[in-house]
Each structure stands twice: as C-alpha cells, then as structure tokens.
Length: 556
Image (cartoon, rainbow, N blue to C red; front, top):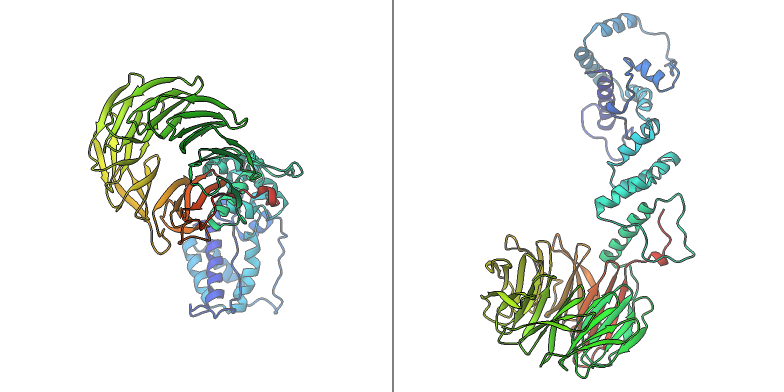
C-alpha cells in the first residue's frame, strides 16, 4: 500500500475512533467530536506523488513547520522509536499505527486529525485544467450540478457550461432549448446556459404535472348544454365539435372563442386536425374541411350515405368510416374522393391510417386491413365475438378493442392473432399505443397497461383512487397516463409504476351527473371537454397550463 493509502487508512481509523469511542460503540447523539467531510481520493492527487506527509504539506503549499505540542521536552527514546518505525515495511507500519491509535486518548486523536484533515480538503476541480474539470462534472446528475454551482464562483462558471447542459438535456430526452413562450420583458442572463434553462423549465413542467402547481383552470363556455363529441388541439388552437351541428375554435392562450364553424346540418361526431386544417364528420353524411384561422369551409365532401362516424388523417389524406359500411379516402387539398373501400357488412366504428395501410373495425365484429391504392382488403381479422369499438395501428401490429371485453393484437402483414389480452370486464372504449406499450380504457372503470410483444398486463390502474364509472378517454403524456371518466374526474397515473398520482380535474357535480367526455394534452397543456347529461354541469372546456414560465422567475 502506498503513502496515500496508508495516510487515508490512518485518517479514517482515527475518525472512527472519534465517532465511536474506544470500545467501538457509537457516541450518543450530539456527542461526536468530529464531522465527516468530502475528501480527495488518491486518484485525484497530483501526479508527482509525495512520499511523506511532510512532502504532501509542501505540495499543498503549506509551510513545513506545523503547530507543535508545547507540553515539555520530547520523551526519551523518541528518535530511536522513529528510526525503528522507518525501518519497518509498509504493512508493519500500518499494524503499529493501528495499535498506537487504539492506545490514544480522544484529545490525542483529535490533535492528529487537525493535522491530517486539511490536507484532504482540496478544491481539486479548480486545480484541474478546464477540460478535465468539465469531464468530471459530466458524471454528476443535473440536480447535483445545480448544487455544485453554489459552491464557489469558479464552480458556478463550470456548471453553467452550455455543452455540459446540452449533454444533460440529451440524456433526459430534451431536444430543444428555445422556450415556447417568453414575455418580451423577461430576458435570460447571458451567464445562464440556454440548455440549463431548458432543463430547469422541463423539470418545472414535470413537477407541475405531477404535483399540480397550476392554479385554477381556465373555463371556456360554449355549445350551450349540448354534448361535446370530439376535441382537437394544435399549437394555441383548440377545436371542439358538438351534437349542436357546430365546431368552435378557441384560443388556448386567452380562452376566447375565436370563431364558430357552421355548415353541418347534423351533429358533428368526429374530427381531425393538422396545424390549422380541421376535418369534421357529421350525421348529415358529409365531411367538411375547414381553415381554423379564417373559419372558412374549404371543401364539403359528399359520398357517404349515412353518418360519418370515424376518421383518421395522415398527410393530406383522410380516411373516413361510416354507418353505410364503407370507408372513403379523400384528398384534403383537392376535396376529391380517391378511393372507396367496401367489405364490412355493418357500420364502420373506428379507423387507422399510416399512409400505407388502412385498418378498420366495425359492428360486424371484423377488423380489416386494406391496401387503399388498390382498394383490396388484404386481411379480415376474425376472432372478436362482438362489436369492435377501438383500434391502434403502428404499421406492424394492429390492436383492436371490442364489446366482447377482449383486446386482440394482430400481425398486420400475416393477419395472424398474436395475443388475446384479457382482464377487462366490459367495452374497451379507447386505447393508446406507443412502441410496445398499450394503454386501454374500459367501461369497467379501469385502465390497464400492456406489453403487446409479450401479451402481459403490466399494471391495472385501480385501487382506492380508481375511477368510479366508465373511462371515456385516455392519453399518454410525459411518461404519464391521463384518463377521464363518466365519474367527472381526470386522473393522472405514473406509466412506469402504475401508481395513482392525483386527480387533475374533479368537477363539482362529480358522482351526480358530471362527465368529462374528452381530453387532449400536449407537453404543457391539458384540455378537457366536460358537462353532464342531466343538467348538473354546464358544457365547457377546461384548460390547464403546466408551463408557468411566464409567471415565475427563471431559476438560477
């Protein structure tokens, strides 16, 4: 063992004696004679390794003279003892020191500690070249970096390094540092790393989601006492569709209704939105394409002979499904119907389109996979024993939810059933699929998390805080699951653990008629469409903003 190893062993041996006493038992609380601190490991010391403690003191810039004990002349035989000690090998010296420490009184050990301890209290970060110091800091977690910045001025400069924080943001999946919104009067300090600001902002948003520091939601009232049947959210625009035959465009910033889209002669049952283009489907058997910014109806799409019940937009093409049993593919730009897909023998209830394949589910218990360009049904996926109400499709797997209580996972290329997911007790009304993780909401009041590759149920989101009625809508957001229900609440769950975190929304009339029909969320906002079927709750939209950057001073 080298010089530093020996010195460090002595140091900790003495510290243990001070903390625990001669018999090894810990001192009572408040009786310890010394506090531990952060000490320099051997690998962090200078490359020109001193061989004695005196050399170390000189290397650290201290005088070779140290405070001497003035209790009288040195004991006889001291020089002989020291010469004998120097003649021993390293292990023999350690053994001798071990025995010596055990025979020392507390005051004597404390004296040795006062001599040795300062040599380990070195700001090694400031002694390193900047490149090496930054490399050391890369091993710290972001929270530790924020604490390190409070150590001293030089550490603060290092801990503000923009490239260092860019790497930390990359590790956390943060891909941009520009704030979405910032008041003109608030300017970031030039000394603050933009990537550090991005990390702090994202951390604050995450905390607001989980702990609810958002204040009261913004309330947007409209559609009288009608049901809001569909909800879309893009940028700062919100579009709600209702069975009152209209759609309304709202500002997510001010909460004002910007315009009402009129033209349908029947209730609006489905919609899609991309930037400022809105497509709506109605019981009047038409689809309409709208410009949400001007309120203009760009196209009215005729062709279906019954209610347009579902649609899915990809690029400039939208596929609609109708109670007339057909699907139609439309070009949103030209307003032309490009393809008609026939084969279902009952109403088409749900549809997915990824730009290459169309997948549809219907009241005929069937799921169909189509090549829309040739209008050929490639596979009819049979297995459900009741109506199919919900679909997810990622280009590889088709996931279908049915009134028969089961969820089935299919291979889109072969048409084979990969897994049958059982556990729900009623209709699966909504699903979300990301990678291999599926979240399903059911009329049995539960939400389940599945791995579609293994077919295993990872979590059932229930327990004492579970929904008390059917789940109406759900969504992934930031590693969280949001679920709304007929019980008048929106609940937040941790996707990884399955734990209930809190009720994000709880209507005053919850449990007595209040319903949250639809939810849409971005990283920073949640929009809820709520009301009631018995007049106990006004029809309204609730907007919650989890990015309070404009209302808070950016953390330093």
